[in-house]
Image (cartoon, rainbow, N blue to C red; front, side, top):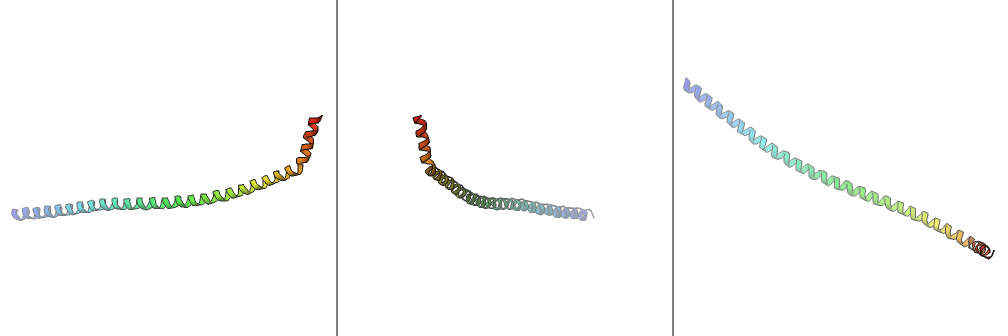
Length: 103
């Protein structure tokens, strides 16, 4: 009777240890899987961020080019207006300066 009880206890202990060992292996495997997934997600996010940065950079460059072209056009218009005023008024300015110097 006692030998059956001891044998049963040893068998139960053995099964419990095997179950614990199996669970430890599963846990170790899960830790490894979690680390792999974490690494994969980091790489994926870094890739997505790089793409987003490139997209924004491209958009900003296009915006800057458009703004630069607009400002160049404004500058050319202002310059042309100044040149036109100068050409139109230069004789009267020269006469005015000449008259001021003579007096």
